[in-house]
Length: 394
Image (cartoon, rainbow, N blue to C red):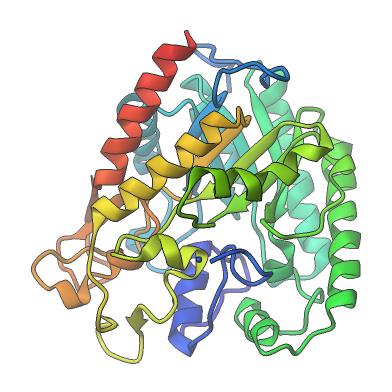
């Protein structure tokens, strides 16, 4: 088993570890979700949330970008790679926003500053998991101080106090690490009322910590069905991986988030890269890879389809635009832990990733191999959509 690392946990690393032991849903699936990124910015792209009744579409469109230290040396964050990636996000993807997430205050701050200098709207979200609550709050406070420094320099910065605390914060549900907590939720080995009470208490602590150091827009990356007191925040943020056959059904499911009278942001959305992945939503990775084999192998029946991923993202962005939501951010940009294999489809782990670019290793089976990424169809589809939408908004 690939255990979760206690100094910090990334979504990609967690999914790999959970897959190795047969855990099930993580993103958007555990709590009942429907299945059926220092100077001021070089250029300004500020946009306020749409007024009631105004038909404009999203104000911010972008992608999530992780700054974790990686499972292998070759996968670790570097300043040079980060700068190249943000250049592509800005100039090629035509995004106007990026969510910088992960552990490590210096990595978060350096990436957020580079994004701000490119004129991007910056969402900063620290994710430190499987450590005591005090450590998580201290990490949040230091990240928030750095975000506030950047905001004071003129950057458009949002601070998210964290992501889906049920998974990443010890003690809300039983479990020594995130993998065990997932298994306990799936097996019903938890008290739902106690979980809700502890979750709300820690969200309140995180909001108080964020407010004490950061004076810009504050939010929290909630699972779609998470019970959050949004009076504590400026923006209602939802990690959304739902699937429906019609636009009306999407609108019906998302509309309750508007009742708070605050801007609504989709802080994660997406699907894996195989046929049927949209229907599997946040559970798309589960059961799709056999991690007991060396090297890991795709499960029978998993057929790569970049077109499927691209079509789903265009569908949900059409919904988000039609609802005049504040922001939508795709999960995620790149997943180095899930390499693409065009020569050996059964080892094409990228088919089970949510990233919009594919990781190509020089030595496919070696995690320490040099690698680069290439755009998927979803990258190109979103690029066209983002560019057209930006032109309409001028």
